[in-house]
Image (cartoon, rainbow, N blue to C red; front, side, top):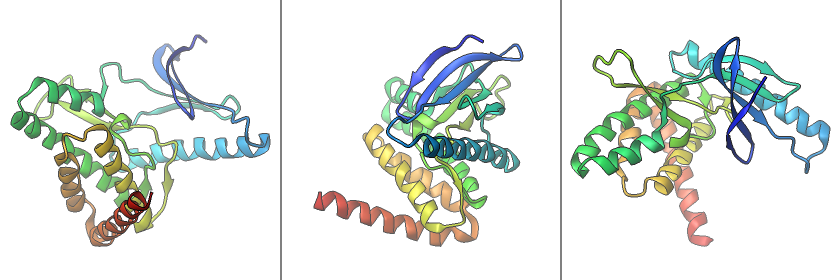
Amino acid sequence: MSLEILKQGAEGRLYMSEFKGEKCLVKERFVKRYRHADLDAQITRQRMKAETKAATRCRNAGILVPHILYTDLNERKIYMEYFENAATAKEYIQQVVCEYQSHNAEALLRKLSTQIGSIIGRLHVNNIIHGDLTTSNILINPKVDQNDDLYDVIFVDFGLSHYNQSAEDKGVDLYVLERALLSTHSEQPYLFEYILEAYRKECGKDETMVVAKFEEVRARGRKRTMIG
């Protein structure tokens, strides 16, 4: 089976391939040479299993994620659905900012931010912690039948995900996203405001506790930044 490398990161490689005659993505996790071989194999298996379980939980909750086609634990590879016309939210935001005047861009990005916030709220209502929320791990997939919505929002890369009811973990999830937005989209500070607004509406009875924990985590982060 031919594999065409698309991307390489710190944790692994992403390939283009085929599965049963259809295009697919293959995510391969590296062997970490600095770890004991048995420990590395154990951690890799745990993370791969967590990723496939998270995908199942997301689908059961009505959250769009790539379908897992096949998992090969021995080869450290996950075969998953490929969205040929999708762009990352990072790319979409940058394109909108370049092509539209600031007030029009904000209107378009408010809609996207609201969708993202609602989806994260649903994740957390179902006790799914993503673990690596960034605009690079969200896909914008154009719809063929464009009724009111021009695109689907698809969350990807659940390699650091876990299942937990902890308000602290949910607060950390939000903080990771806020830091990623400040780093990547610093000139659009409204993005996280709209995301959090939608999140609070979707999060249900735990909203007050989770947001309070998020504020605590944010305060700790700022204190570490000041101290250096």
